[in-house]
Image (cartoon, rainbow, N blue to C red; front, side):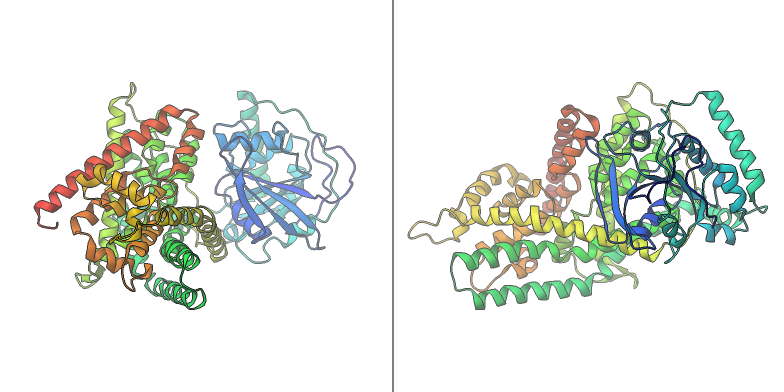
Amino acid sequence: MVEATLSFQPGATGTATTPPARIALLGNPNCGKTALFNLLTGSRQKVANYAGVTVERKEGILRTAAGRRVFVLDLPGAYSLNALSADEAVTRDVVTGKSKEALPDLLVCVTDATNLRLNLRLVLEARQLGLPMVVALNMTDMAKKQGIAVDVAVLSRELGVPVIETVGVHAGGAQGLLEQLDAPVASASPVPWQAPAFADVLATQREVRRILGLAVREPVGSLATSDKIDRMVLHPLWGMLVLAVTLFLMFQAVFSWATVPMDAIKAGTEALGGLIKTIVPDGMLQSLLVDGIVAGVGGVVVFLPQILILFFFILALEDSGYLPRAAFLLDRVMGTVGLSGRSFIPLLSSFACAIPGVMATRTISNWRDRLTTIMIAPLMTCSARLPVYALLIAAFIPEKTVGGLFNLQGIVLFGLYAFGIVSAMAVAWVMKRFRDNQSHSPLLMELPAYRWPNPRNLALGLYERAWIFLQRVGTIILTLTILLWFLSTFPSPPEGATGPAIQYSLAGMLGRGLEHIFAPIGFNWQISIALVPGMAAREVAVGALGTVYALSATGEEVAGQLQPLIAQSWSLATAMSLLVWYVFAPQCISTLAAVKRETNSWKYVWIMAGYLFGLAYLACFVTYRIALALGWG
């Protein structure tokens, strides 16, 4: 670590005043900036969007070595301030003062010590802004393992700013940076930013090479390990096999690993419902608590373990450096349907949720490629569908082993995901037919060195996803569950009524009306009711079914018995049809809203909703009729 005053970079000519109270992390994608942010802020962080745009904003609070609280803003990754994407434009506007965001007291430029040739260009651009600045030389542990020697003192001297060694994935790896943040910084002297001319870019590249020649010594074949792995992972045949096996094992784990925690949650939900019945006397309040809230919300929370297992694999693959390689590997295949490899990461993100997947398309510079990726993103099986799939698969697919190794339920789940992917590629191929320019643009992408996923980053990522899911459970799902209970309870049945009370309620009337529309594809009135609140969030449909069947059940049946209830009352043809419905139907208003924000047009929202509902109905009709012909009715 090199200690230096923060007042001598070009443009920052003010005198040292006070330690920074607000800092911003600036850096290239894949430089470990997010890992460093997680290390600095821990759980004291939140995620939102920048005002007026859909670019993700991460901010948090750190404590310095002296105990001071400092606000930290994690800027979107950028290769240059000369922005080519929405993410880079936000970063540029924040650090140049063009946004409503206040300028940071200190700019922390995070660099990858194993790839300074690429990273230093952004550092040199940021140095011209006139802001107090420090360079965090991150991933120094990996650089040393690869035999890369960085003379920190020389690098600091040539850059004219302090350079601090950090390791964002190790506890205590940012101690030097935390100590530096207690030092006074110079007052900013912002310099108006202008897009660099071609000659300026060439000059910057020459300066990068000059600094590297003085400060960095790299051994021959420093990336030998990654290159050896890539010979397998990027092989046209073996690489595709590795990717297919990885995805297959991921979906197997979703069922196999989640059994114990799901059983525990189910038991807890049933026990809570029984406890409420012993405390609260029969009546409207007991019905709301047991049949409404516990049946509805509990029916969704039970699938949290499966969702977290899915996210665990996605986060681990991303942290390891494998995802860019999968995108590179699939570029040629995706090119046949009019997409580029850059579409892979947004589409993979859509397996978690279509909203970040739609937002991630901002990295695709070609508008037609980007629009096609947006339009097919909902066909990727998001985690909100998982509760529906898990419920139906558990109810209708026997839990047995195939070939002495594979779980049959996991195979069916993998098949549903594969069906969504194939359908997405088919839609992309059709959209390509309507394009004027059907040529495939080559993919240029940085492939970071392989690294072991960091347990701390994985834990924070899973915590964040679990918290987001539980917030939805406590807000959207709880609200809709209570609303559905109200609609399912009122008005009361007339005197002499013999059927369940829900048949005479507002929800029952609505379900009976929708049943005429959905009967040709095998849906009964209970399913028709559940589809309506499911428009707000797909996973609400499970809670809605729990509420509807709890209120329409007889005797001692409760929502905890939803799985055997539907297994007894639905045909296999109906279950197959509903599974196919959820492959296609865009039952998430939030996704449609994200499409409106990203495309700035209602036209594409209506096109997406129309073609997906049309495909859903047609596919369900065909599935249901074939299933009936096979005797599954």
